[in-house]
Image (cartoon, rainbow, N blue to C red; front, side, top):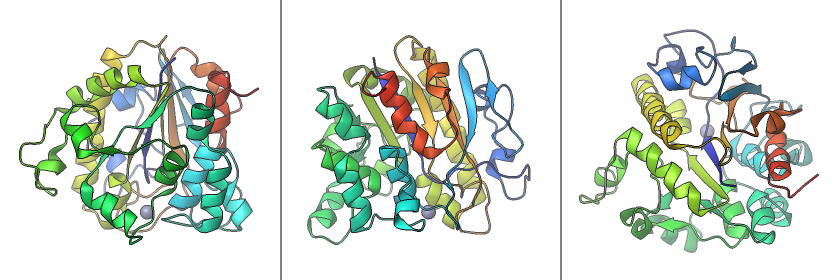
Length: 305
Ligand SMILES: [Zn+2]
């Protein structure tokens, strides 16, 4: 089996307010279809379609305050209530205690220890590896989990060889911000097709982007609309290529942010989880919060009861 997790940092289910919520205005037929023809909003309930299940998901985990990335991502990847263990939501980068929790066990580690394969499909530029090595920057909880499973992070070479997917999907950021003028650029649909293809090489392919959270913090609103409309095209390409017998596609997030522009902070809203694939009902059994993702996926993979 080949499963995909698409992690979009900082997207929650907010108000149906076109002045502050990109999800209230985006033109995104594929994303809306995945929620039974509905927008991804606070008012959108648990919904089943022919191909997907949409589940509002609790990132608060019973801990007061605004959910943060380090504890949220660690909860997604361990199934443990990390903010409760820590006594608070914390982020963006993991504390030593959060890193120790991830080192004990995490989704990537469990898969590798079962002699299956997993990857973080996003490439990182040389500058990223340099600042990590010099200790100038801490890996995120997701990156830390990957490294602690001895999985290497993908590089710019992997991207040029077509073995990685850019966090902006099209790769345009490599040609502009990062200055790789001859880097490949794809349409959103092509990026989705490539993800479907690359996923055949691994038992778990994890896509992660921080861009959605960054737009949530800094705006502008239009960038949020543009990113989610690009993602709509990606999902169109991915679903056209994807055989539902092949495995699950899970879209999720760690906390809200993008859905409430103008306030610059994370929200306490539910986040959307969308599950596609033949085993989606079995995965969705009892699913309601971030800590359900890893145990439920390991159950589908036959690696947990
Ligand atoms: Zn943030």
